[in-house]
Image 1: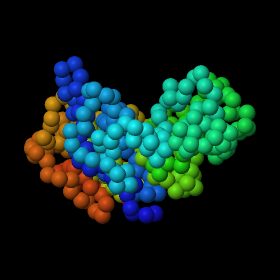
Image 2 (image 1 turned 180 degrees about the vertical axis):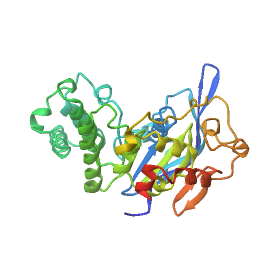
Image 3 (image 1 turned 90 degrees about the vertical axis):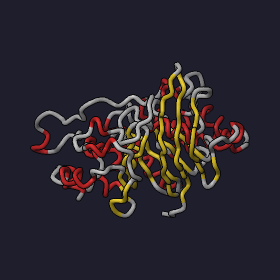
Image 4 (image 1 turned 180 degrees about the horizontal axis):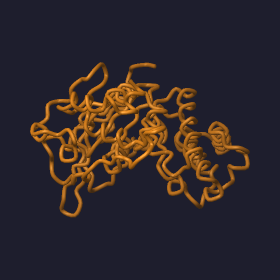
Length: 340
């Protein structure tokens, strides 16, 4: 795997202005995605995962969304402030995206083949015949049976898993350098979910692309990602290799997520642990740790302006001044012991 980053997000802050209020959706978000790497962005609903993806894609709502600081670079080219015409040449071509709900993302009045072929013709400037041949090739690639006849099917005639495969085919039809998969298995049953995740992993290897995987499911992260970032209330609170974060969680929020997972064997008995409290309002800036009001490890210093994220070990960073206490408490956790 090359260490040359395909995607660099540096100090990205984003605000929404609505109903006379300012919502601070992202606060100084920074990360790199290497070529050939799968990086997972994980956190509960509303933490800023999808907003980060929309910022990268240039799909933020016009008028009320404002990037107030930072850069987003694709292979060295800054995307922030890029004219829409230029972004259209990148979106769907160099960056592909798989959205959460394929039924609402696919056009119900056009056939599957037409929708894939249209994307190919737009970016590759090939004939209609060649675009349809590419659409057929992509359906074969994502393992849809009887691909030739499926080209003339409409979205409602396919199962949920098949629709998601079509979305992946469309996202990859122009050979993107980067695939953003935003909760790609949320609406699927567990068997189909495993098939879709395996498909994305296989295609990543076969096509040599990078993947930014957005999910709230730590099981998906463990099975598919090389590195992970834990996001809470628009901030990256912990990041590092998947196996190191699972083996040595070093932020109170990461610990809360891991303790919320169901156990195995005798540990499955009893009530699932939940994170107390509610997600904070984002209409006022917070200087200290935004998770402190819900954190079982919080102390007085957590409400003071925080120092930069500290390095726990090579490539593993945490924005928590109580990281030693977090790990000491979590070292006996069943999941942590299995990864240690």
